[in-house]
Image (tube, rainbow, N blue to C red; front, side, top):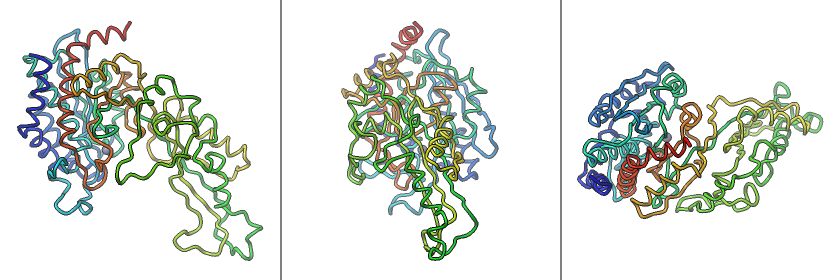
Length: 469
Ligand SMILES: [Zn+2]
């Protein structure tokens, strides 16, 4: 009954092929959530895989139907060990993006786990079946190592619609607030900073998409006969965009960017190098906010991207003054930017520069809020120390992911600190053909999660008390 024993059991679970077998079975279930036609597979993943697994670990469970019709159910499970112990909520998603079977390399297929050297290919190996399989297995090894105990209470929320934008997740969190209440979230999704370096991230950037549109008149008019006396919608829209973001990608509107990077965030980012791997595009050093490192630009700042821009008919240009133009822009933002203010700020900037003809409205894409635990939170320090004790490596600490995930559900609706320990890596091809998990990363992840859950049983109560004080 020791920490070493828990970590050794986790290694053994990998080494004897049990992890591979569990993951292969789960990958074989085509749990695509974006099709809207895979409800049986989504439910089967819970009833056939996850429920038997958590029952073995002593959880009680219930399936909660999605309040949004046509989307997969949720699993809420709980292992109550004793009153007065700290409670951990963990999260995963059993759905995957489209299989995209035609796009995979010869010899590979989305619903079959194929091992090639260190790479284990298959849809969901990285996002997210491999990751929550690792965490459930780590819990199981700790229970075995502690003679049937964890030393904390554990709750699980598994959703089956994350890749479809988590429909119903926020409503379930509101409705099941008491059932999901916990002292901390420890979850795994997304990539490590690099394959070799264990990573902890504490939240995510937010994302808000909006559309700019110029609609001056019906139909195009001959550019020879009318050009020079009719306003050009494309020209107007291009200039309107330059009042928001300059030619170097720098945001020009106060309020659409942070006023500063907090000292603790800056300190964490000082240790982060944005890796350039083979196949990655080269970073443009002069692009973005001047004076920031690449890590500060991605993880500590806001970016405004022009995602799409259309005027006239680009595929068959006509000699005409285009009457209409439309662009979709996206603001990725860190904590401190309120998404409710984005449209009014853009409107005010356009008006101030004389572009009343340019309309602005939110896109239909879901808005993600920005969340970030304070990097000096006791849970953060504890998690980093635990991972270092297991792996001998200093983990990378990202105050938030550059991308977005529904962390606002845990941080804002459920109001708990959020510690994410990702088990994938940047080149895993998640969401594309040839998705894969790296076997050595999975093995190390099993070990460090076993260590983390073991340490939680030792240190959890102390940290909960320290935070309360
Ligand atoms: Zn995903």
